[in-house]
Length: 424
Figure 1 (cartoon, rainbow, N blue to C red):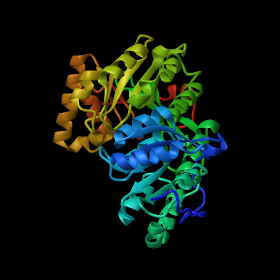
Figure 2 (cartoon, one colour):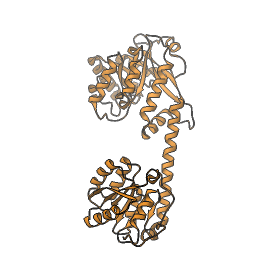
Figure 3 (cartoon, one colour):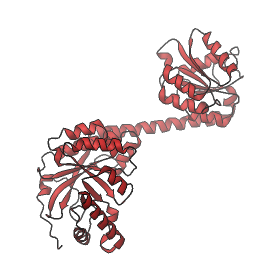
């Protein structure tokens, strides 16, 4: 690779990859050089330092050092050796892209290795140069700073079609991701969902004691609520969507009778945010709220979660653990959270009237809850036989299609439903 053999047009360009052009913002291009070969590293450093249009901001001997210096100096262009220690050029490229998005990475390699080229491009590199090849380093740096793709002729001769296809696929994936983010953000901003309420009956009194708030989305495609929330979490918008749903539910249930509790589905990750704490604590009737932990995933930090729950409990909010008897709603989970209510999972309730193991487990959970001073809610009740069976076990509350489907009817009207008639 020499400075003398100038190639006015880089060996390959495929338009401008996503990202702003650093040279649009300043006249001098700031450069980081990372190579474990001290001779190569110093030769490039001397070349960069000799150019008025370039400024050397750092030298690194491995990927870890390159990332550390890059994060601090935010260079316009980073020349990184593909095979240097501590992760190589692919690690440096990936992490620099995250920590310094404006940095354009140029890969340096001793060969035009096809797999290496594709790996670096997939890692976010804007170009690939072969050491000792006829590419002008200064011109390559300037081209990268403008946002041009820079691929040495020796590389392009063997993989140009595959590189072009790869870049096109990457741009297509990026656009698909951006489109999904925009769609979820529009749902949040425009509140494209409503709240419905499902009654929860007190089995001793036979009357409606509370309602569970559930979201229903009014935009195409008409996916289930679970899919909307799962997609939001996968795109980094889960907290925002859940908080928006909670805010809409609180407003929809604002005029409910004071003796009717409102159960809100919230993931543990949301309960630990200050935004959730402020939203719930600002409610005048916070003592009638139930925070229902719904996530089918292991809690990473119980200390953080219990501190957050203690904060809202001081305002009178009660806590429920959902899906007991399924997934991660284990006894250990219940013991750490010490909920006010335990909700038996629908998989345990379904067919319980003729399934002795399910009946034994439900009886054990009910007895365990009674010892803890915790109430039990059975959800997913679909038949009178299931209801009678669970009432006989001493379950406190019940909900399900047999008792009432989710409805847009106001909580006040739901409260006025006819009392249940149980034989037990």
